[in-house]
Length: 250
Image 1 (spheres, rainbow, N blue to C red):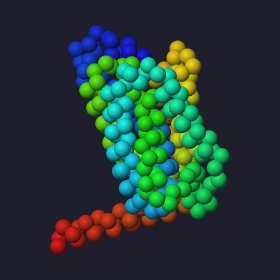
Image 2: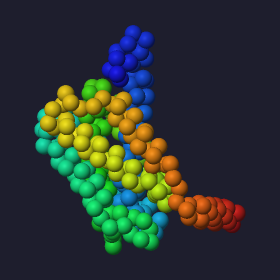
Image 3: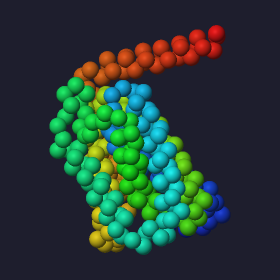
Image 4: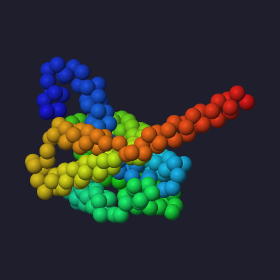
């Protein structure tokens, strides 16, 4: 469907800006499940400060890996083993999430970290696994590397803010973390299907629709104590703003 839009006579004269817009939208939409996975990983660290550091440093490494993947994509796509490894890793994340015991205090599934440096590699590798799907999709739409690089850069920036936002939302919405990891499983299955038979890969519009419906379910119920979480977050934000104002005035 995207190919038909981009190849239409109306879009021909605006192909470059339209292509860039399509890549940005795709990166933003496909970043939602990635952001959930990264937020869940960051939650394995105690305290918001360590979580922010992990996301910042992890995504710096992830950005370098993603740019490297884009620049070598024409070589990487020749080897189905890369996509198989990405699919296995994402499906392992989903399996690990749904089979791990829940932290009764924080309602958190998944790994717990005692050090910042344990979380950073996992964040970087997780983004790289997701990038195998998004970069392959981008290359199928455009052969202009600079456009894909811009889309990838915007994708990482979007991912950084989404991941921190999801850390707060995971405490508020009951089904959101489950919904996120279901979509992670869909991405893993999509990569696996591509390895087995590329002709069976579902189209982008179907993938985006499925992700949208799953996230609609994820946001459908709030935790009973969510108002308390929101109040604490607002109070923390107010305190931070007051401190910044005091610094400026002094």
